[in-house]
Image (tube, rainbow, N blue to C red; front, side):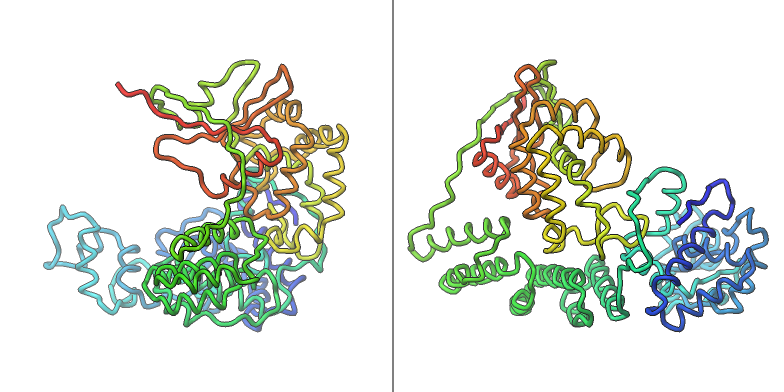
Length: 544
């Protein structure tokens, strides 16, 4: 795709045309009659009408006051709107509920409509909402209000959402991506994308995505989980990534059912949900009912030998609790060395506790950096860039991707195993340092979940490469690759680099009342197992 210049007043229109061309070229076999008609009809519109429609599509709608539509490049919006009204892509008399009316009306208009029933003229606009809901309990059309200003309602929002879904492969990205790129705010990795690279391969897959998306929105908006579960259809496509999204949603719904007190529905939903954590939640449900024997048996089923470290940690914890309830010998906890401990009492700081410790421990020869997950993710991303961003089928299908679409799929690493092996092989000699520094320069500023450029400054990068042994990097990267979803987080907060002796230590900081999270415990146990120096720093504040 060709970038547009924001100096061109119709830059947004050029971008939208490119999207339609892209979708028509790659997804013609998936488009329904309405979508095909929209693409063809859009091309026949006058320039001003195309521009106005795109402006409205990119704004928050679907209702727009005509007196708030002023675009110099479009000119008379009434003339531009006429072909859109004729095609029914815009409407002028849609029915509005009271909340929509309230958001569109000005305070002066509300007072005029309320007349003798109005509050005092000094009333705030928000004070008039109860009156409006009472006056229009079933809503009304805009024309019934008798206002001079016209109201346009966009009636093709669902079509445009489906076209956006086909282009981006998701609905979390919006048309604003184009503006951010055109203005140079975002830069994405340039990955070769051929005409056969597609996010969806069937109409059923599109429908599955939309159904999952709508149910997730309903859950986020507080709709009861029982109602949502009844609306969630079974998958019709054979897409593995959609199956994962479907399972994750069912897991969230089951958790909400627990909160709503629907024990049996939660149990049934977990039972038919192939998502990490579902079995652990079933054990917890049995514990809540004091059915210790059933919970113990379930926690020892053969399928409980999960390779997921997070799930195993929770299962072991449950087994330890249940053994106590049943009078059984408690399973031995995994033997782990306790980390070195620092105890600091510091003056109250205006910054966060991590920065306070960093400042306290810092000296020129042993600088301390607040890096948390950013340093090791960055080193991993820079070393393994060629493997992470190789254009395999199903990984990249539009130019605004900061990450391969299959990053968290079970076969992500295995599909690229030979490439990852080549990248990690560089750690056997000093070539990994040159590779990382070269990629830092070549990729600087690109969007990637592995690269936090605000933290990953070149001096830190060089000092880290000087002090971190290649063996430690190798085992850390291998653990990340074993579960990218869980193991990209949980790293200690600080790193102290000993520039005189080419050594280092990691420091996890805990302020008053703070405690280690599960993923932090797993990383600290792993560090102890592999001789990675890590300290746990407890901080209290000086009291006056």
